[in-house]
Length: 335
Image 1: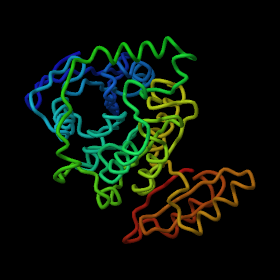
Image 2: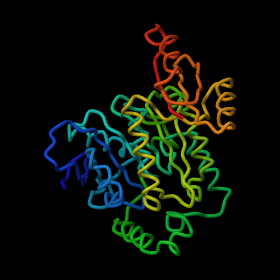
Image 3: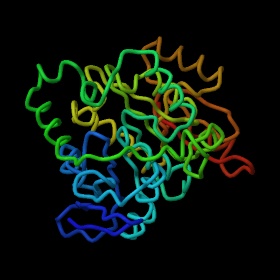
Image 4: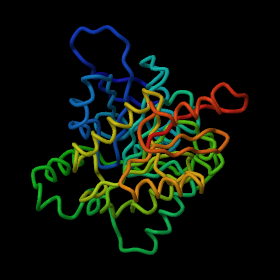
């Protein structure tokens, strides 16, 4: 529990890790909260993941215990995150951004991709210029939805009143604040802006998680955003609104744990959305036959699809045709 003086603001943060005396270096997961939360929002994730990872939670400027630091633009959130990692000597980390927290996480991913081992965008497309434009258009033509009435699914208060009450209480702890300038999105383009060209060039593993009942950032907009990043995976959780991590922590934690494990093994998770037409056809045939497809995709654009695991014949074929060949970056993906 500490503060770091960063970019004119005092940023509150907490670093949690296993206490079993193991001195082996641990990977770091950064959890960036949304506009309805603070570092407290991750109470269902930190105890779970701190068994095997260093978990960094923090209050973004103007939230929780962190000071606002005067006039600031949206890029300041990304600059704060980068400076906080510098302060803690974290060279590379997994980033988990929920709602507003997606902006600094996506910003750092497109601006300094070497610092990001993998990115999880939870209920958010912030930091992605075209997707934000689509979201603004949606809000302009649909019924008014606010953080107060759309932070979680409509049924949560009736089905899990204690959970809904806790969410509202955590949100109420935030002081009044001004909305940061939209300097990195609606105005000038900066190195933290997720333009279509930058997103298409990303080689960082990315997972999008959406709540099926999210009225603030509809699943269709998140799914469309996922298609802008090569081999990004999209997962949708039934019965949840804008706060999957809070509303259904077991489902969210399971998706995150599986994704991080795959990245650590060098096997990125990928949905079938970005396969070549021939590979997509093979994927559909295998699924129709009740088999679990497995896909491998090369930087040259060629994809292979087969049932089974990477330990079988498919991997041997992949290695024989592509491994070590000039102009081919070996990337593995699991369906």
